[in-house]
Image 1 (cartoon, one colour):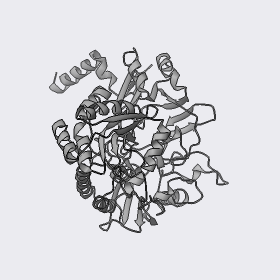
Image 2 (cartoon, one colour; image 1 turned 30 degrees about the vertical axis):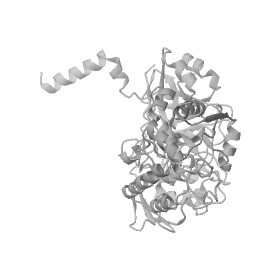
Image 3 (cartoon, one colour; image 1 turned 120 degrees about the horizontal axis):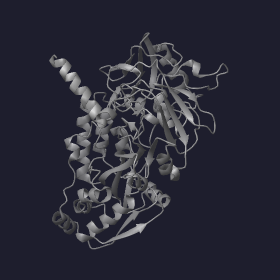
Image 4 (cartoon, helix red, strand yellow; image 1 turned 30 degrees about the horizontal axis):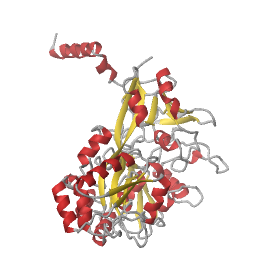
Length: 529
């Protein structure tokens, strides 16, 4: 027997003898039953919310999408380029791209969808302001202005902006605002919505009120050449059917055990812990983009002194905090950017060294007189806000701070945050997908937005440079400059990222959580019944 046949026989025997290896070999077919918490509002990509927010990505694609590392990759487009001046972006559609009705997708279809949905006043698209130049915060514009969309050839479309931008691709990739490429046949003859005829790996089969939402595999889907990552690249569908079933969250463990559902996204930590040792059930966990932080109001008489803010920062042992609150599952993160982001370079690992002696020295230099610090926290929003506050109170008291922990309802604490009326808060910033949005969340002008934590003209000037720079490598260097300025100024002490959990039956394979924590069921398969 030749060496090739011997090797093949050995591999075959290995698979037969090792069920674990066989289980990791994708199998086509079967149905996946997924728990959803509420009924569907509608099926318009980028417009309707609720469970459709996740389901839509199995049915529809935009031109581009976020990868696992939050860089931008191809989706309906196989390539994208920008002009040297950063004002023109060109997209080439991938080979074999078809709508669910079998018709080839052309650049004219892309232009039609943008002109009639995403840039239209009549469509109900809630993210239009991100693309028509009208989106802004109190002190600056946060979107882009598309002034022209040109069809260059049947597979090539060009977007022209009024000024250079480095955020168009990120805005196009936002999962909640998905500007999907959909066919005109998605609408009825009278112009009302029918159902999405799009380009994703699954077709919407049924979405009747009070019934499960059913998707069927689209055999006409031709994957791009790039390996699947995040919402970019190939979306290889193994399952014949995805069925999304409304179920009370409290009934999830029982439903999983009975097989009434196969997958439950975003279960609570309590359920995650309770299901870890249940036969036939698997659990997964991973960090989200939401980040815990300690906020210090620098207009406060105490915290307007930077040395006192530095003293607080050096008194907090962020590693010990993460170990205690997440059992070591989540690492500390001193940056406003998620650990998983391609822009989170080694520079962003630089934070505040835990140094009680230095903290005491800075307190003395700041002439801290023992005045009590009011630390606000709550128990009813993100789960670690209160535990973080308890531990940080002890750490601060260990170096000589006097801390009064003030428990508030979340609505009350949020109102204080928005008004800038607090001394210190244990807080969490909800996840953002790209750096400009991360920094916009907490930096700006206090006179225009009272919730602003950090005022720095220098940092904002650098951020404006990044916003206009299409080259990711150049933007990355600018974000590093901003991080260094932030660490020096101490407007926020970042702690770690919020952890999210999923639970599913052991017959389910191939599921991978990621930083956006939007469940993806392409690449997932089940054991044959």
